[in-house]
Amino acid sequence: MAEQYGFYVDTSRCIKCWACVVACKQWHEIDAGTVSRRNVTETVEGTFPDVKRKFESLSCMHCENPLCMANCPQGAISKREEDGAVVVDDELCIGCKTCISACPYGAPSYDEETSTTFKCDGCYDRRQRGELPACVAACPGANIALDEMDALQSTYEADIVSDEKSGTRPNFVITVDANLAEEPDDLVVEARTA
Image (cartoon, rainbow, N blue to C red):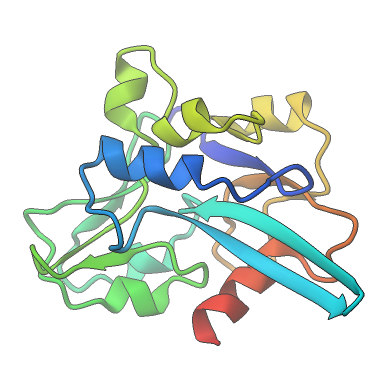
């Protein structure tokens, strides 16, 4: 396999403008108001008048050991050889939602219209044409990047590089807002289960 790709996210500068989510939905022709491949979560800490709001734009972590793939009964999820992206084959997916419950990051979403699941694929079609992924191109603060993990780690000053706790070995590099009391991946799980 070629070098593993992953996402860089700077949570210290995200302003929750939703440009990444909207661009992703537009590119993948996902209706407004429905589930998406990228989500922005909000963390609120403190009490009035000392309240802090912070935001994180997260999607699939394209894990080294993806639980969604390991638990898919149809073999509809695989890791792409070219970049290590974890992708769903719409032709094989039966919409059982097993991948959704297996993913510790809540990355897969269910499409009611097609009765299948879908998730971020790193905008492979765009990258093949030399374009940036839709979310990366749309972010006005340049807070998101997709690249080879080695390149991300050498380019960005990061607080978290991947995560060993989950056992999935997700591929991400994050600059965390110092005001957050918990790591972003913990917050995503809490937000999905709350």
